[in-house]
Picture 1 (cartoon, one colour):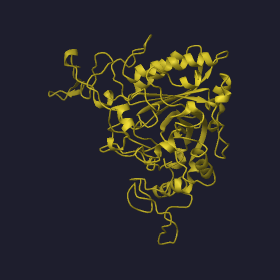
Picture 2 (cartoon, helix red, strand yellow):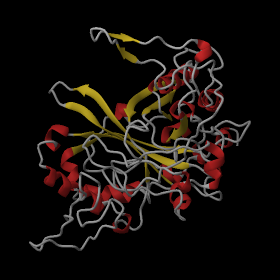
Picture 3 (cartoon, one colour):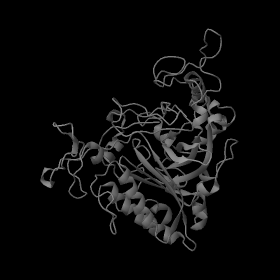
Picture 4 (cartoon, rainbow, N blue to C red):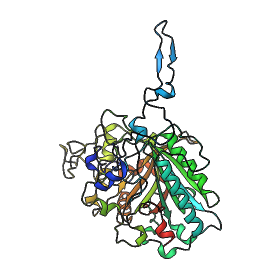
Length: 452
């Protein structure tokens, strides 16, 4: 769960196309080249003017004041409307809805996330699906710009800016039969093979439609979730929903790769947009088949339970041997810094490999899997304590690739055969979704499929 590196938090790792889509600020990251995982940089940026009503809310706008006499504590009064301070960059950052690729793929990791799958209602088909995607796209565009929903807005986010909100839409295998579009279903969307580590709950797997919501503010993310659920109307019903989180931007003294709930630095070897073969690995080419997937990608979604009680019984040394990297700074056990190439042949004084043969970071390396790579962009989750008193916590693993047969599948097969980490995780839900390219201005996501 720990390697593939995230792009740097400076704009230098951002492509020219991305720079025009997002207006620029840093990002963070996430596991190795395979499950569990991390993200890449499509960096949002600050705006001087925010479109969502008159805004309050800056760090320090309301503070706790300690009284001089007797040490009595009280709350400082909030500033009046004419004293309102501008939003911090956290709230003002805006990601563009329109573009070659959908937002939420190369966007920096966001602090809050919701993954939701919908099934079309009985009797709903291609016409209803097209109308739904049209509504969803219009709502996503407005909310990502920091504006209210077109009608019946809940006001949950009325005081906030865009907060790097992204909304991403995808189609499941079953969607095509439901809409009479079987001939347009991509071969790459064939069901994933069974893996020996799977303990999948079918009720929380797959779905006709998939929506990924991310934002750096919890209320902004929830506001988008409710708006899209209401937009679904009678056309679709929620099949499953999962809620996640990451470290908030600015929570560390300096930009760094994120940590997961096992305490491991997670995402060191994620592909970067600055790499020459990034688009080839992550996005369907313009001449790809089917043509409506041009500029799109395939998302594998897995709910991976971490058996934290068992994991935390291990010594730090044993945890590092399972992963193959130091827990303190993410460096390979063979030495160097986090970004130093791992020396797979290095041995210690006892003659044993310093990076164990079954270490997660060794097994998931692209050069150990025929070059297979994926862009991992997960959220952590914690759903409380189960009936046995065990934390229901782990990773909402989301990975992106041009073809899951060449990305996720070979890596997961190899992990299945002997990953030391498999003792401490359990795959509980799974989905595979075709995520079409971004919508041009005046279009909605999936229009080329639904109206082609």
